[in-house]
Length: 465
Image 1 (cartoon, helix red, strand yellow):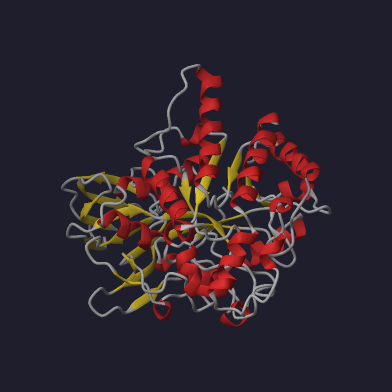
Image 2 (cartoon, helix red, strand yellow):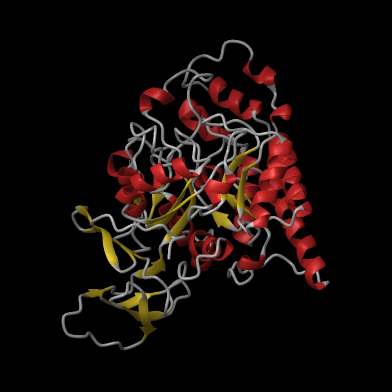
């Protein structure tokens, strides 16, 4: 395949040739088409690396009524996500080799490449788990969420020891349940769709609970020289704790106290032992939006105040945030309509990750390079995906073609997750026209008619040779 006249994230206009091996053979000017080669004329549209969403819950096994590997990966492909990393809180939880194998069999339905994380519970089996092609350890829950996999401090320390011995990264869900405000759930909360409900959940799982757990996770990991990635940081103070740890780490390494990479070019991401992600829902939604969402806006950690949301977005723009990942956590409409205590936590988001960020770039709130780095280059470097995350010779042809001048409204009816709803309804996003995984077209949309088509499942485990 040859893609001609494409604009890269840095503004250069180039042609890109994809070889028979599914890798990018050349990125240059004036490449002529070979005999029999499919040519896509980009016409100045942007060619970007496929997003690597390091935090999804595709719900199989055990929750296929919410999502499957087939439906979740279709949603990913339609949003320009070409690699996903699935978390362990399924049924059974992915805490031993047998559970890993069961999930790996189901992942054969994936249109996009994938990683499978392993979880930690009191009865986990690290020997059999690490014997598999594991992406990372985590999401390690320091407080209960979906799946009730919260663990205590001693088991967390043991898990870090196991991971550090194998040089495996650890993704941490950091909340301290001892700092939750139980009084916020007292009284009549008024059902699933009221302002009281939304505010109660945010007040219950406090910002202080997140910050304390992030600081403890960082300190425990540092004692063991473990690589820790903090999932879904929802507060600016939590991001600041990660930045401070990173600066301390840099000072210890070379004595010069390097500042955060304000350009966000991903150059030093691979060397970082402490990193963090933020989610689109914490970047674009706040407690003000939660008042209309009701329990559809319930997630862990919860939505924060508008001022915290704005500060979190500012940290993304300035380079303090390493990764944007979705915590794509679908539940059915019926489940989310339960009262506050019974409704499950989590929102879908894998299909709207790139579109929302690209719209922010169009409006000048983020640079396009910054978007590229937090969804592709940085996660690839942090988690050691040597052939992913860039539009460059020798890299996997995981590519997304988008018209960055063509925003449209986010509509649940146009999305592809099995859960059939979105918390971002009515916001604007820039959606892909073509998505490639290792040179194979897995999604294509006609911009004139909106008609979309999907390719065959070509997903592979990124940890397998």
